[in-house]
Length: 200
Image (cartoon, rainbow, N blue to C red; front, side, top):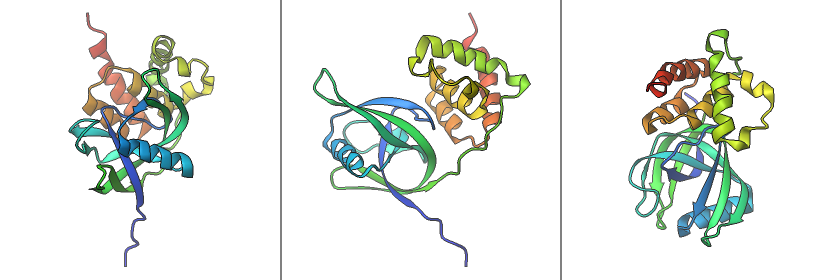
């Protein structure tokens, strides 16, 4: 008899953006369902899932999430000037959603299968331009990475995820970069997209 896949029951936070492993996102939390979720995660030290919205909006009726997302852990809390709760989250592992259900308070929960961590690869010589492009983007757009250890720029997975965050990709492209499981393939696809941003 085939072994059953162990699913993790996870609260899901559908967003209009993609969270990548190792990435950070600031969020403002104001709906009761998400305030309760954040409180529970803070109390238990547990994570929640972030998925790109396929249909619907971040607020209001439950949105339809993409099938592949990223576990998020809360690394900071603060009170915003507008009086709302602000949190900073960091992406860890990726997962695939097997099925979802909506609780009475509107919170979407999913049975998810965690993906294994990507193999580590050095950036190959033929893609060596990409870390240099990332350095320029970090300098102008991502101060949180300005003091990143130099060896991260040799890591194909880290470079690919950071480029996918910072380049002006379409949502479906960002989601595709999340779903690719080979870091070298992700870098090659990003290289092929780059000329679109260099015209004019």
